[in-house]
Amino acid sequence: MPEEVAELRERKGTLNVYVTTLLYGESEAREMVDYLFILRLAVEKHPTIPLDGLKLITKEFLEFKAEKWPSHYGVPKTVGLLKEAAVAIKAVKTLDEYLKLIEAIHQYINIWSFWMDLQIPWSEMSTIYDWVVLEKDATLAK
Image (cartoon, rainbow, N blue to C red; front, side, top):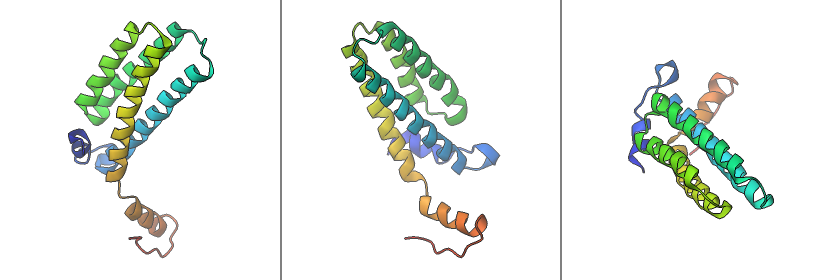
């Protein structure tokens, strides 16, 4: 497991509890995976799409996450990667180079998201939800 994911498990978040940091971080990482995938699909479906527009949107997106994530999640290594990618995107000259960079970022964030997801106690949370919110007798799934 990446060190940053392990550290997220110990970082208090919303409502001064630990799990919210992990839940929100995983959700944002998954969202980022989806957006990067959509950008890749756009290039594949529309090979004449203007590169300058793609670069601008992608740079803004990466910079936005790189500015937001330090205060919410810490994760300096991943934030550094996002900042480097935002700089690198400016140097891209072709759609092929753009795709290679997007695919690399996508792969990194996707794996990172996967590791966070594995840390979330979904079964236990589902059981507690059934008990507390739905007031149903629930048995912890094993």
